[in-house]
Each structure stands twice: as structure tokens, then as C-alpha cells.
Amino acid sequence: MPKNPNNQSKPVKGTETMNGAMKLFLAGLVAELYLLIIRRFYVTGTAVQMIAWFDYLVYLAAAGGVVFLAGLALAAAWRKDKKKRTIAWYITGAGAFLGGASGLIRLFNAPALSLLTVVVFLVMLLGILWQLYDRECAYALTILGLSLVVLWVCRKELSNMYLGVYVRVLAVAYILVLAVITLLARRADQKDGMLGSLRVLPASADVLPVYVACALSAAAMVIALISATAAYYAMWGLGLVVFALAVYYTVKQL
Image 1 (spheres, rainbow, N blue to C red):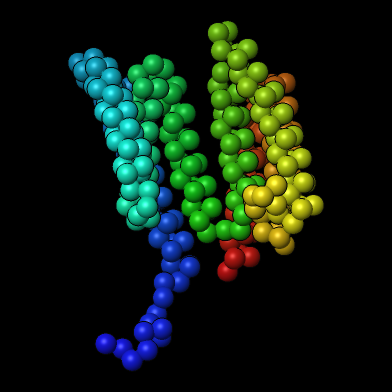
Image 2 (image 1 turned 180 degrees about the vertical axis):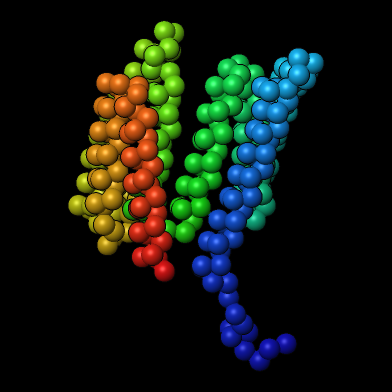
């Protein structure tokens, strides 16, 4: 037994964040693999495979719902044990993805699969960034990532005679959300990172990246509303901004 137990090495915060980032990366890979399997057998498979998976997706959606409810029940039962509660939330998230993704693909087929493939990748990437980088950077990259998804939807469906109106409403609503986020960021900046009793940013945070992300996203959405073709170039522009911002904060972090 060591003479001074207090001298034992303690886990470093950086190690914990790296472990969290690796877990998100592995979860994202598993989710993308599941979507790849569905694409192989349901979207591009033979007629027999497509018919079979048309039924399988119903069962998978139901199974996901059961797993989701079981995870919630375990989280409630293990609420006093942090380690077990974390495991329960992992189970809940897995069930939500399995049920939600299977149900959406069953209802909307290939468009839902393509959208989920992009969303899973972005969620994985943004989750890793939230683990590794400053909060203001994480907020900015999250806003830009969501904007890329909305732009992708606009480019695909704005000209759709059935969904075009709904997509335009979504784009306008998203611009209003960006305006609200900008106002909340300004208020938090004036209150040293606090919104009421909730700390959303460090006291010394630089809110400029959040303002820039909201402004660029709103401009890109306006361009998308004018032209679906222009939305394609707006996506590339935002993608370059995301890459540049990620590189900048990576260098800053190092």
C-alpha cells in the first residue's frame, strides 16, 4: 500500500475528453455501417432483398423503440450510479437511432437514407469537436454543420412540387432561429457567459465565431431560397468555412 495515497496519479482531463471523442467516433462508425447495410440490401439490392428488408425495417424500428424505452427505464433505475446511468443513456441513444432511422427509411426510402448518412457524420464530427475544443468554437461549428444539412435539403427538395413549400418554410424558420441564437449569444456575452442561472459560455469566451457562423448561415439560406443551384455553391462555401475554422482552433488548441 502506498505511503501517501494522495500522490497516486489521477486521470487527466485531456484523457477523459479523448476517450469521449473515441466513443463518439466508434458510435458514428457503427451507425454509418448500419446505414450502409440498409443501402446495400434495401436501396440497391435485388427485388427479393428489397421486399424482405421492407418488412425487416418495421421489426427493426419496433426493436429500436423497445431498446429506447428499456434505456430510459434503466436510466431512471440507475440515476444514483453515474457509471451505470451513463451506460443506460448509451442504450437509450442506440435505441433511438435504431428505431428512428429504420422508421424514417421505411417511410421515405432513399432520400431519408441519404439525409441520415450526412446527419450521422455531422453529429459524430460535431460531438468530437464538443469534446475537444472550446465552447464558442463548438457552438459555431454546430451552427455551420446544421446549416449545411438544411442547405442540402434545400438543394434537393426546393424544386419538388410536393415538398418545396415545406422546405421554404423550414428555411425561413431556420433563419429566424439563427437570429434568436445571435441575440442569446449577445446576451450571454454581456452577462459573462450566463443565460439566467445557466452558464453557456466561459466568462472569457470570444463570441465572434458564433456571430460569424450565424451571419454566414443566414446569408447562405437566403441564397438557397433564391436559387437551388446557388445553394450548391453556398454549401461549398460553408464547408470551406467549417474546415478553416476547425484548422484554426486545432492549431490554437495545440
